Image (cartoon, rainbow, N blue to C red):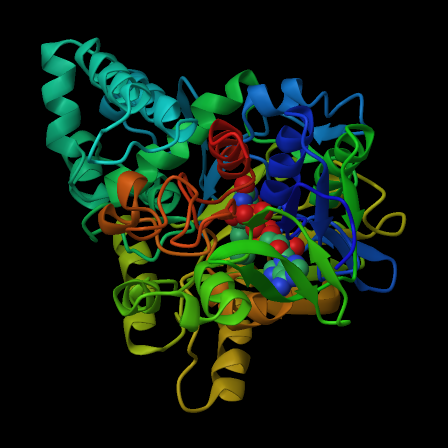
Length: 520
Ligand SMILES: Cc1cc2nc3c(=O)[nH]c(=O)nc-3n(C[C@H](O)[C@H](O)[C@H](O)COP(=O)(O)OP(=O)(O)OC[C@H]3O[C@@H](n4cnc5c(N)ncnc54)[C@H](O)[C@@H]3O)c2cc1C
């Protein structure tokens, strides 16, 4: 055994890095071991064709808390923004574009009733999201509530809900368990508006708009938006990898050692306590506290081993649901494409192809039967318009999130993949005639590919479904809430923990605070 570290963090994704940084600030000697040759996990930039670079998984910051940006001084550690407060437009194949702002709607096809209703509806949801925002940054209390700090946290949460006022509190409790489809249908008329809002309610989750719990997943997304403040949707200059690089720089300045190309093979145990890690190279490194940002199954089944766990816990981990439905498409384009009804300013923002809630539900349905959508729903960006380092002069990159693509592509995955690519390109071509002619190179990453390449369990955005039974005090599974595990000295800090994923950093930050609170 070698190396004098108090804590070893497994994985240099953004949550692992933030956890390491907080621990170092808390006076711990910290080592981060990462299997890849670079930091960032699912928040990286990489080349996918000669001369073309793209954010390989996460491509927009929509939930980065101001607190994370400022507390870790990321801008003075090299983070720059190519775009902030990027606009969102719902687009259609007929050339209608609808701008969905934070306060107002504009564009053809907005009915007077929707225009009048939107600001009030949005304000109401953002108030609820404010309550959720406070939940994101807290360690979920144990239901036994034996500690005063936990009782106090829960009381504070209750008070925040109470402060909404009787009417709003009742409304939050009413809609909290609803599906997005019914809520939007109750409030709006326009199909394009409802389709676009329902897209956000389901993005990254494993649900269609009619699935129960989609108001919850929407509030979760809005809570991230609440946390990000006026920054809104943002694109880091140089792609998402620049965000992770800034975090790594902050870590190193705080004294954290980061070892890349150092996959962990085993978490070591001595006297029923985590005692270090063994790398695939055979090197063993001792530490009293191990914090894993890998997903649940990898941490407990591959790295720890079921011999250290009771059968009830093993069963719970085994039953934890993690089936991603988001695929990623990257196109290298020889010239800038034109989208019908979309001006240059809108093209620099986020375009949503989800022209109605029925379109979205129909795109979701095949995934239940391991089939690909014939008309996929998409979030499309052209990051090179805001950042000319991503493509050769005059050429461009298209980066799109494609909903809903199953992890398991059925009996003939190659044929399903080819059909999916064809359906995606045909859908894009309807909105951007002539796009196919511009394509120099294509990369399509299905949830299966994302698992293979980034280690995200099931290719899932949050390393596991965000649903009532896997949320807050239940996340990820009993006996491993509060970032702990059944094995003393072993903690977790990745997206699989509360409050889940997105490039947000709360999981890593909360985990470090839970470790430090134990005085280890
Ligand atoms: C297709 C897609 C698009 C997305 N788009 C967005 C978006 O636009 N905006 C957004 O905010 N979020 C987005 N997300 C979600 C976001 O990318 C993730 O939730 C987030 O990056 C997870 O961060 P993490 O640090 O918890 O985990 P990860 O980034 O997965 O990091 C875990 C790290 O642990 C390492 N590791 C695992 N096992 C070992 C081992 N044995 N030894 C050493 N290292 C190990 C891995 O290599 C990895 O680097 C998207 C996700 C997907 C899949």
